[in-house]
Structure formats: structure tokens, C-alpha cells
Amino acid sequence: MTTWANSLIRISTYEVETLQKRLAEIADRRAAAHIRLGVLDAEAEIERDRARADPSAQMMLNAYLNGWKARKGAAEADVVVLEAEEAGARDALSGAFEELKKFEHVAETTRLNALVAANKRENAAFDEIALRRRA
Image (cartoon, rainbow, N blue to C red; front, side):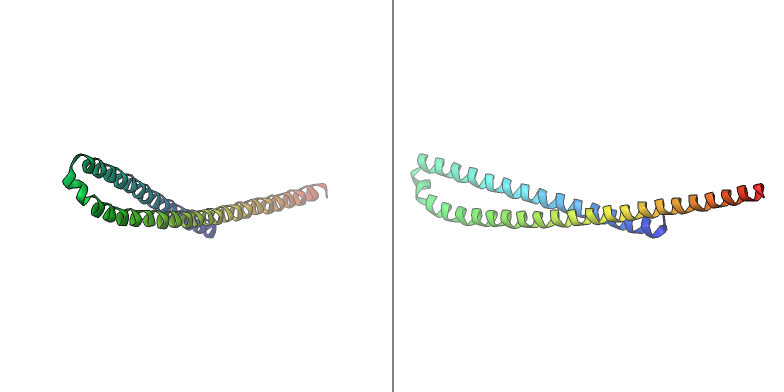
């Protein structure tokens, strides 16, 4: 394989690996955001239970739920942003992988063409030797 092909493949492989790491990091952040939503829901349920049992906590429940709604809205917005970011990262990774495969295909085609040309030269040399022996 030629050095230019090796360089392009190495660069493309690095880009694919970098995008894979980025996608994994985004997926981790998205999973953490979903966990945060679950925790918020569990906390709200705990506060509702406390309000049922304690009249003084019941008076503060509405204020808590208003704050909870704001926090939950922010967490849901984070999930939406992270899902969009993840979709973009998947598209970028797909494109980078396609580029890598193109470079690998071109490199392999170039290598095979060089083998075919070398075989043709070798066969021509053998044909010439055979012709000289007959003559």
C-alpha cells in the first residue's frame, strides 16, 4: 500500500475513533439526564407522601412542586438537546466511517492494480525470454 493511502486511512481511522468516543460521551450524558429525570420524579413522590402525612409539609408542597416543575422542565430540555446532539454525532460518525471505507477501497484497488501491472510486466518479460529462446 502506498504511503498516501496509509496516511489517509490512518487519519480517517483516527477521526472515526474520535467520533466514537464523542458519541459514547454524549450517550453517557443522555443516560445521566434520564436518571436525573427519574430522581426528580422519585423526589416529588416522596414529598407528596410527606405532605399526606404532615400538615405543615402539605402547606409547602405547592411551592416545592413549582420548583420541581422548573427543574423537571430543564432536565427534559437537556434530554431533548442531548438526543439531537447524539443524532448529529451518529450522522457524523456514519459519514466518517463511509469516508474510511472509501479510502480503504481506493487503497486496495490501487494495490491490486499495481499487482496486475507487475504481473503484466513479468509475463511480458517471460514472453520475451521465450521468444529469444525460440529464435
